[in-house]
Image (cartoon, rainbow, N blue to C red; front, side, top):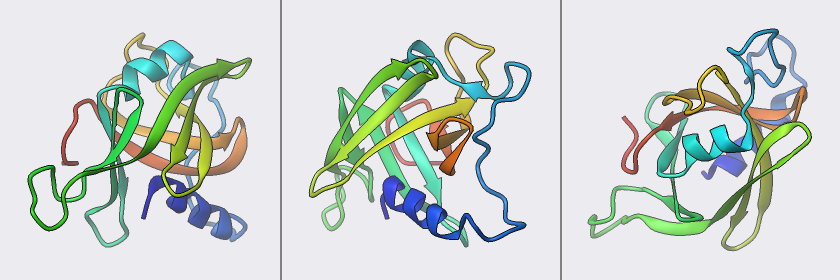
Length: 152
């Protein structure tokens, strides 16, 4: 399941009370705000976004390189389920902060703001909240690995 499908699944159950979801509200300090365009670029380009699967393992391992999103699958040399380009991404900004736009092969375009620690000009690897709307909206927490390859 691609990251955008995970977001849609989160939207379907967001109305159920007492469940924990990614945090799309900025805190009063730099520990949880929307990343700027420069911070988002530093974090995402050359990184792998890892979406956890319930029960363990990874649902998605999306590599970001040169504007291409690649599903890692079982790796580029696996003879049965090799890595495959699945779409493109662009990074831009609006008055709220940095934005990542995805366009997936076969359909689907998605836009996210990333919330995380903005205290650093080059955000470290870790968990970031991908949110469709600043301050609210569907969201999912994604582990970002600052390299291309399989998720840890």
